[in-house]
Structures are given as structure tokens and as C-alpha cells.
Amino acid sequence: MKENSKQITRRNFLGTTGAVAAGLTILPSSVVSGLGHKAPSDKLNIAVVGIGGMGNSNLKAVSPTENIVALCDVDWGYSKEVFAANPNAKPYWDWRKMYDEMGKSIDAVIVATADHTHAIVAATGMTLGKHVYVQKPLTHTVYESRLLTKLAAKHKVATQMGNQGSSGEGVNLTVEWLQNGEIGEVRKVEAFTDRPIWPQGLNVPKGEWVPETLNWDLFIGPAKMRPYNSLYTPWNWRGWWDFGTGALGDMACHILHPVFKGLKLQYPIKAQGSSTLLLTDCAPNAQMVNLVYPARPTPKRAKMTYPEVEVIWYDGGLQPAKPTGWPAGKNMNNAGGGVIFHGTKDKLICGCYGRDPWLLSGRVPVVPKTERRLPDGVTHEMDWVRACKESPESRVITKSDFSEAGPFNEMVVMGVLAVRLQGLNKELEWNGEKMQFTNISADDKVRLTISDNFTIVDGDPKFDRPNLTMNAQEFANEMIKHNYRAPWSLPDMPV
Figure 1 (tube, rainbow, N blue to C red):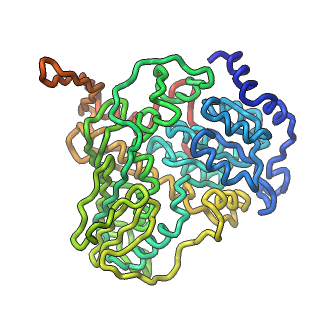
Figure 2: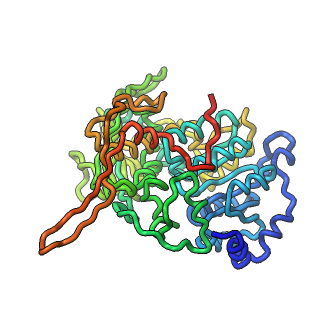
Figure 3: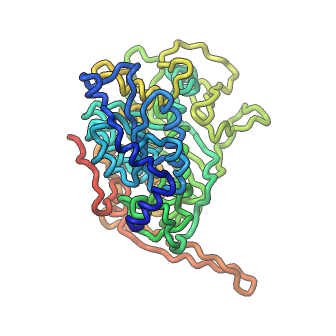
């Protein structure tokens, strides 16, 4: 898009909003308080990057009490109503320019872009000392998750991943029941979602003219450049590997959080994936993932132990088999998915977001409340706002602080790796500390299907599925840590 067309678009959508906002004098919290944190009654100056979808929902959750000082989006057509509804926020196309111009005025940043740009926006913000709230999945890769975890610790900022169920009572109860030993040892967990609800398993579409209201180069960001097509954005990007993480990335952060937290998981040691036809560019229609976690140390006075456990994920309409004793007619799908914890004494079932936990035996546990509850009326976003205003020394961390959300998100994107490497036809062995597979050799090859072309010739079906053979180790390493397109780059990994 040419710069002059951008200026025309800005005038069309916002009138003089940008000029008015640019004239405001906004003081950051460090200036207001002089202490590096704010009193609860003071207002944060918040910027939002990616405002057309969930970013708008997050914005609305914080705007009644805080200052929204900057809004950034690459698609001013999709986001025009949000810009118009927040006339005092300075509008931007490029978050880098926003940081350059307003970095000293911003306390905190909400990041709700496509998955592949979460890490670079948030990491840059944290190096500038900004608190960050990042939509789920936290990042696109294992390396990016590790980076955000370490940057948050280094810069002592308040963080939150946008898996709002982690602040809900369902997760609290599920974790408490597990850790009180109500179902005994857990060696197997099954989980599923009814997603995707957007198209997947698609061939790469032909290029189209880029709408004047969209900056396609900024949307692509650090990913490999490709021609624009309306199939990619503003919503269906989730199903394309370069931008999203499919149904797994969309929903596992909601569904698997009580699994990760309740069973005190960290890094898996084995991974294996399978799916319907796997294409090079687009996520499959349905998939299964098996992750194996090693035994974890049992804390003193703990009421449960933590043996090796297998976590099995299903999506695309697949569900686990209903265990013996399942109530006839009861739908396993609760708000988009569900989880079955197979314990040695009982089975615990919960829905998406940890919703409505129950035991297959019918017992209703009464256990001590060990998990922090949010005060009535406080949302996931406002709990983050509260943490932003507290000093690092006395801060009560949020319910999905990056110290937990980072390692948890590695679980999610590990599932993507397992699916995309299924062509190796073996269980993958993983060294979490080193972020590398230990049983993919330099000579291993993986074959990828480029496209799926189906025709009927003289009444008979004909399939044309061109393939691409790649070095498996190089392919895996690229998915673990992306090589960003110039000039995009991440901050260095803290030691």
C-alpha cells in the first residue's frame, strides 16, 4: 500500500482523531508515581495492538477504568469501528512506530494480533519495560514461548496470557480436586475440542489485489512473504501454518490449562501426531496428538503423586471414547471441548475453561480452597491491570502469568510440531531444556504434501498430490525457532 493511500484511509476513517490524540500530553506511571508502579486508583496508559477481534474485547474490559492511549492495527477496514469508538487514542498501522513515538507514554500493551506476531510485539514491549497482556496461544513457536518467559522474569513486568478460563472457578476446582488426591494417580488424560469452525485442509489460493485499507506487508511481518488472498485474513489466518496454529493453538490454551497446572507438568519427553491429509501450508481438518510427560517430584505433604503421564489431544470432530459408567445421553462437549483425567481411584471430567468439573463416581468433593480466587466482578484483564500497578517486590502474579503460561504454551505448540512431523513415522523424543528433538538425525527426510487436487475423469476419481521432500532436522529446527524475514528480529534470549 502506498503511503499516500494510507493517509487518505486514515482521514476517511478517523477524521482528525490522530491529530487530536497526538496533541495530548500523557504521563507514564513512572512519572506519575515516581516509584515505578501506580496506586490502584491511578490509571494505566494502555496501548492495544490488533484491535479488530479479541483485542477489542480486551480493550473494552479495561477501558472503563484505564487510559487507552494508542491503537494499532494493520487492517483499518476491519478495525475502523474500534478506532472511531476510541477517538482519544492515537492510531497506528505499525507497532514499531507506535513504540518509537509513544514508548515513554505507555505503561502496558495488549497484544491480540495473529499468532505469528505475538512474540515480536510483546518481547519488544517488555524490553522497553512495558507490562503485557498477550492473547492465546502465547506464541507461534517453542523458542518464542521460552523467550517471553525469560524476558518477563528479567524485566519484572506484569504479564497475562488471554486464556480467560484460568481465572475461572472451574480451573480452581479442577486443580484443587486433583491435588487433594480425589482421583488418585493420573497416568492418562484425554482432551478434545469441536474446533476448527473455520475452513482448514485448503490448497494455497491464488493472489488477489490487496484492499487499500490493509497493509499486507505489516500483516505478514516476520513470516515468509506470500500473495494476499481474502482467505487469510481478517479471521481465517488461524488455519494457515505461517500465521496460526490451527484448532490446537486456538483451543488447547483454554482446555489443557487445568491439565498442565493440576498435574504440575513442564516439558514433554515424547511427542507423536497424526491427522487427516496434512498439507504444507494449511492445518488439517482433524488431528490427534500424544504427549508424554516424565514423573515429577512429589512436594512434601502432597496428597497426590505425579507419575509419568500421557496427554492425548483430539480435534476436528474427534472425541475420546466414553469411559465405562458414562451417564447415558450426556454430551461430552461442554462449551467447545472437554477433558477426562483417568485416575487410579476415579475419573475427573471438566469442560472447556475447566468448566463444571465432576467425578464419574458421582461424588462431590469438599476440599480446601488453595487456589487464589478473583474478587467478584474482577475480570481476567482487570486482574492483569491490578498486577501492573503493583511493585515487582510485592506483586501477586496473575492467573496466567508468563512464568506458567510460557511453559504451558510450549505444550501447545509442541502438538503442532508433532503433527507436522508425523511423516517421520516414529515417536519423537524431546529435550525440553535444549529445545531440540534427540532422535531426528541429520539424514532424516520428511515428505510434505503441497496441494490436494481432486477431479473426476470418465467417472473415476483422480488425485493429484504433488509432494516436497525436505531435510527433517532443518524443517523441525525452523518450526522450533523461526528464521524471521528481514528486517524483523526478536530481542536476544536472556541468559
